[in-house]
Image (cartoon, one colour):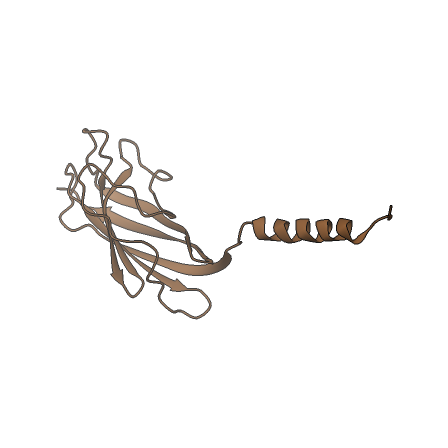
Length: 162
């Protein structure tokens, strides 16, 4: 009987190779700049009209637009889920009596430009705009293939008194 024959070495090599194949692929992080601008349109205090948040996403290191971060989501007045990896946050600076935002539509306009339509918090029928300033944040953590795009942008809009 041979001690430590070649069969044992091959088993170790094969197990190591299979272990490498079973590792999850790691996405390469790509920092993005996220710029936002809200257009209040016809939204006024005591109303529920939509606002439109435009988002421009560019690669941090070269300024190139990033256009493949989500497909359109059709208008639904009851609210939508944004594409995977997109977050619209509005609860960090809500004034007393104010409401969170509910996204109701998402459009990928190409060339790194995206639009998010939003209204006052839909699950609460008593939610209406109050006059004054509102802050929101758009955060991205989107993986496309082997690239993971991460970034965030802060925005503000003002609702006038009726």
